[in-house]
Image (tube, rainbow, N blue to C red; front, top):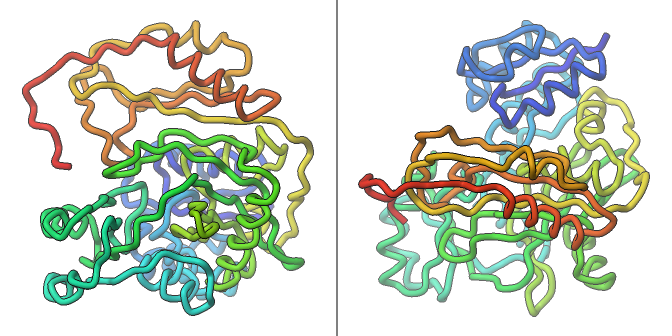
Amino acid sequence: MKKIMVLGASILQVPMLQKAKDLGFYVGVADFNPKAIGIPIADEFYEASTFDPPAIVEAAKQFRPDGVVTLATDIPMRSVAAACEALGLPGISPKTALLATDKAEMIRALTDANVPCPKYVVANDRDEFERVKGSVAYPAIMKPTDQSGSRGVVLVRSLEELDASYDYSQTESRGGAVVIEEFMEGPETSVEVMVLDDGVHILAITDKLTTGAPHFVEMGHSQPCRLGDATCAAIRDVATRAVQALGIKRGPAHVEIIVTAEGPKIVELGARMGGDCITTHLVPLSTGIDMTEATLRVACGEEPDVAPKFQKGAAIRYFDVPVGVLDSISGVDEARAIPGVRQISIVKEIGERIGEICGSGDRLGFVIAQAKTADEAISICEKAIAAIKVVVRPDKTEERPK
């Protein structure tokens, strides 16, 4: 029986933990929270922060796994890399982990490799921000260099807005640095990748739906991409070059791309599976490829099966509800009975306050569907959401800052 260590036991990691158990792995899990939801799934638990590489290395030395993984979270990739290096396991290097989790280092590496990217400036602190802000062209996107899930991301249209928005982005940055990039317009996509010894495998291209300005939080995804063969070929090329530029030699990658008037350009890249159920649910539903299993197996030095089994449509759509207090939800069972609906999840509790959608954690829940085409899958998601009645009552709590 092979042993796998999963970093993180939150709801994000549950699909990885469950898949590992289903495949017969002996599973260890590390998390700072001894009450995390995924701990009972695992065989052994280590109380250690996934953001603390030395603590994870120590836990891994005790557990002695055949592989170390995490799902859909960026900063723990530094701990994955440190543990793999310390134990001589397959995985990305600490240098690649840094490039894939620090947006400033990432865009420098991509630019140096001539991978299409937006123009950018970096401000490591307030003094540097004051020095570089005069070189910013508008509109621009400002974001923390070391966050994910759209936290701290904001559109700025002028110098005045840049000054006003700096604290919003900077306070979300663990290290205090922000990157300010050229605003790119066009269809948004992500590319789901598995890198094996024989090269870069593009498993799927995902179309994205976001809230738009100012925070661009993702509200939906669908596969396969509907942008046409020529555009998809260009997207695959840019994604492949980006993965190679960051030095990912084995394992998954999630590459976010905007198709601008000048062609596809990189938004950012994660050296891990994508979140928002894209890789855990949509990839298997649209291609038949079990990307979670592939990630577990490649982490243990195996060559997984990443050949597509079929081509269908798959989609996820998130609820968009008013700000207020969640009063009631009804119609979920009726929505689940709609043909093609594969999952409905509500992640907020009755009585919980629903704020403005500024980041991924602000969303109420989602519907996942499968059909013959992406358009049909999207339509099923929308039909299911329409069948669910969500009542949100106003309250006097101050809205979170934009």
